[in-house]
Amino acid sequence: MDQVEPDLPDPHPFASRLAAVERRITAACARAGRAREEVTLLAVSKTHSADAVAEAVRLGLTQFAESKVQEARAKIPLCPLRCRWHLIGHLQSNKARDAVALFETIQSVDSLSLAREIQKQSEKQSRHPKVLLEVNVAGESSKFGWAPDRVLEELMEVNALDRLEIHGLMTIAPYATDPEKVRAYFRRLRELRDRAADRLGAPLPVLSMGMSGDLEVAIEEGSTMVRVGTALFGDRPRPQRAPDESGAD
Image 1 (cartoon, rainbow, N blue to C red):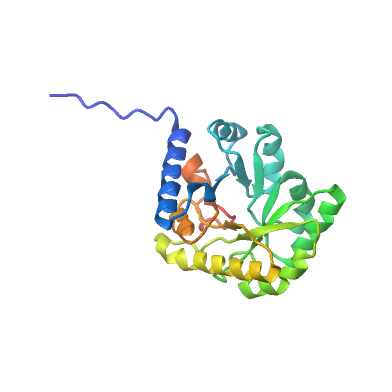
Image 2: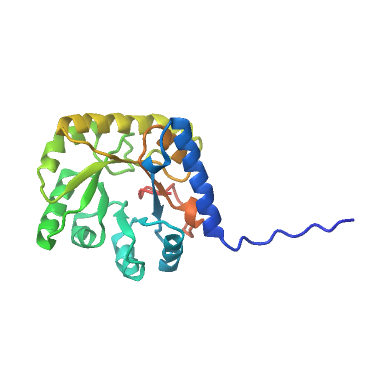
């Protein structure tokens, strides 16, 4: 009787996970009639080491995201210089100074008051951060972000802050085991982005929406940036609690 060879651990788990994510993105783009180049893969490295980031860089990734300023402050100096850093977690006003110093893009600008504080800190540091306006499309009380109508009402005031470069919108969809159940929220953000661009009279090219579990439907609905953590880096140790609300999975 033939012996069954035992399953050996994958010697290159990150490379295998990256290849699988790339296949998913490519297939979703093909279904939507979009070019693969239209979607940026943002690697969410929160709770993972600088060595894990360096491995991802060796495999060609350059866009990384963190959720907490404190963790980023310790990690970013240890990572390759070619990394481009995004903040995707909720930003408290008292952390705006460090966020402006550390991040090229702040995706979680969720109020006019926070935008004004980022402007203030950017003036002090002679910086021009890229920002995304976070919208709470589903109106969930557990999440941060502008209400859709209010972001349109306050858009011109944010745009008047000359240190901020508004590149688009971001949302965190409600948690669902079936990705189809969140498709409508992604569609609403795309439609809101189009209305905001019309109001500004300028393009807003970035739609940051979709994570490990729902990136396909997000891409089909127009996402230009998917925030992927678990599907790339593997599970992260954390206590049992409600699904993460920090901009990534």
